[in-house]
Image (cartoon, rainbow, N blue to C red; front, side):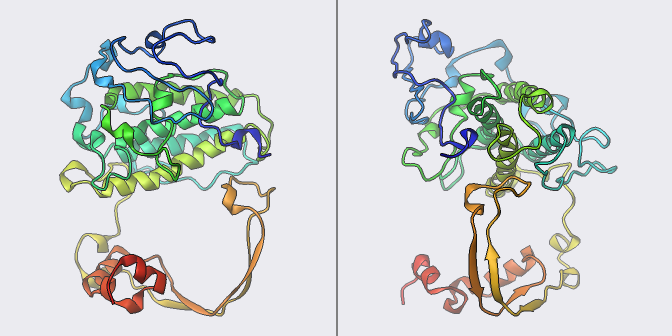
Length: 372
């Protein structure tokens, strides 16, 4: 069996019968009181280990008024005010990874042999990178609208989701015995993956207000910080220890740094601005001077036999598909010295690369759907 903190559990809550406006054996309070939902609304919630997290949660949070939910247009304005930062603000000497100019970059991948303070520094860097990036969103519409392709949730979901996963995984691993906010930890729990239940039905609901999710994040930050510094897990961390849930949370959040940035790039330009604390782009990306475009040459590689796979005792986090051992024969090939730049990609697209069959594999060309 996989280690406890890696088991495919969709909920940190005890297995219990499904409920519809009635009381459960484990909790005598009416469901509407437990989740702060008006009694007149549909409230079917499946709290079982294998529940469908999306199917039952059609509750419209917009009908539930709370004093702390009051919002103004300034909540969504740019630049964000001090209340936006729920962990460490991106200030040099305060938050790890912020330089003297206020620009923020990622810390190197944390080792499983790290000290608790090093784990906290990596967590602070990761947490604040998320907020620094999403601080570039302008206006309520930007947080609440779904992407044009309707294949992902609105960005307000991912703002809360990365925090929610820390809590739920730490509960499964035994590092926490209770959550922070039951309702948030259900609606923010499951994103979009290959599971059959991910029908994006949650996109039909009205999402929580920004301030509500921000305050949820603030509470989660303090809980996770305390677990990192004082939690009952052995050091160094291994994949069989409860501390694995923490570094899983770090890398999960970093995955969403990439995927959320893609969703931001798909938004209309007027809804997004460059995050204030992100490093400036290379001048060739903005000045249009062809003479300053990065020169990218092809480098020959002789190929040969290579070994793939990560040993289980390697001292860093890994996803399950990184482990094992496999040897393959690689034919000689050429690759660019640097990653492909935006300028190179624009040239490829403008020159008709997408309609040139020689640029595609056979399977890729068939997928593209271009007739012979």
